[in-house]
Amino acid sequence: MKEVIVPALQDMQACLELMTFSLKEIKMNPKILDDPKYDYLFSVDTLNELVKSGMPFRDA
Image (cartoon, rainbow, N blue to C red; front, side, top):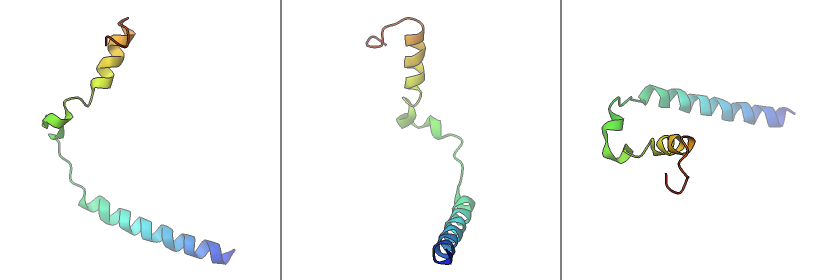
């Protein structure tokens, strides 16, 4: 049992150390949605609203 648990705990510790390092380096970009490549990000929401209002899916 020890042969399985000890390496698993070591792997978990390494993952947690990596996560701790990574989280410190994350920087938020509050204006990311201003980039034109994200213009269609919410297109599925718009599509769903059109379908819910009665428009056929193909037309929406």
